[in-house]
Length: 151
Image (cartoon, rainbow, N blue to C red; front, top):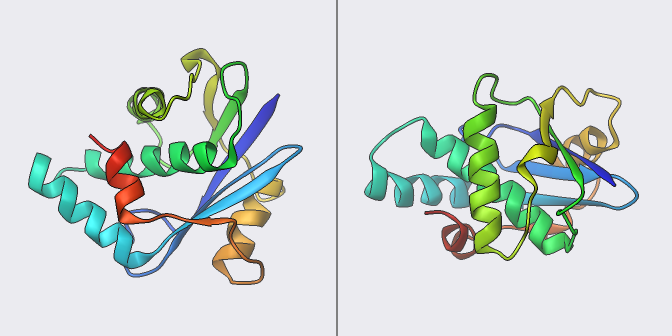
């Protein structure tokens, strides 16, 4: 199986909500409100200081939360994540695997890939459509859910 993951409105832009969506035979989306993003950054800054890694931590936690809520089996699933943060693939992959294990998800690091999924991807249509409020997101992240995943 293969799933594609796309993000609309980057995590670090804390003035608007972010939508992370996946698609394959199934589909789902996760909204992270601007308020929850700001609170998650405060939480991480108290632990690690202000660092660019906090963006990747929240992004990876959101990917894991979406997959956990969607109940996708990931152990033998190709997970294709849109190339949102070029050059940071290894860090994000490591975080997804580590955070996933905290949630009981057995990601296979060799099956996590980063590439442009493109505007024709169903994941893009889903994330962007939910961002524009043309369709409803499947889940909404809470700060508690994110902090349970984050280090």
